[in-house]
Image (cartoon, rainbow, N blue to C red; front, side):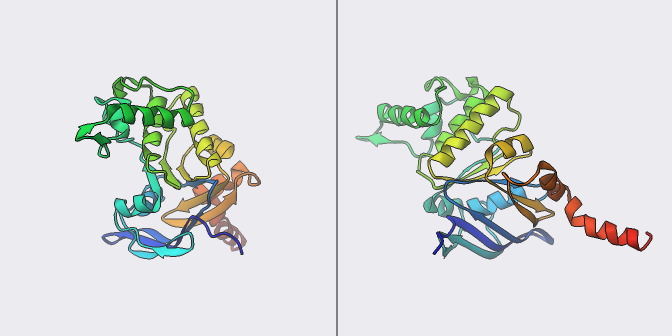
Length: 257
């Protein structure tokens, strides 16, 4: 019997007022795989991330965790399952150092006082598993490069030993070298057996990194692809709707429209 996916969505819908942002969404995330979530602006990608992370719960549909139905109504529910999210804005405090950012809200205390030594030890250990380029742990985060800040945000998401990580545009606005560092981080997450859902507009990153791609268009599924065997053009056509509209255009031509 095949192993069920870590996380599966069936018929998930989300509405804001009269606008149905997500309609009958299907998605599966498996351990040790990177799934790229693709789509044009307004396709529903960020909303889907919010549904999975519990920020904006689904109105209808079924969410399964290892084959059993679960209810994600708030971020705490997602964290308890083992789902971590790194948003595009990173949500870091620039005036705090790396250690302070990693343990913000979940500080380690000893005899009623902050255990700075233990928090720094754990921070160094965690970053050491993710990257060779360990930043100054006691310097303010605002002084770090964009790539280093992204590393800190990803490291913070791993403190609770999650099994699924959601990454919202992790390489946006990064240079070539910094992008390579972040992609190496995502590769490391997969090698450690985590399931990764990666939102990206960069097809180069997707082809280099992802195992599968799921395309959203106008709030609906518009294709699932094996990245290794599917051409760049096929995926782009699904994103833009060219594959969706091709039969309609053919019918129009046959009717002389």
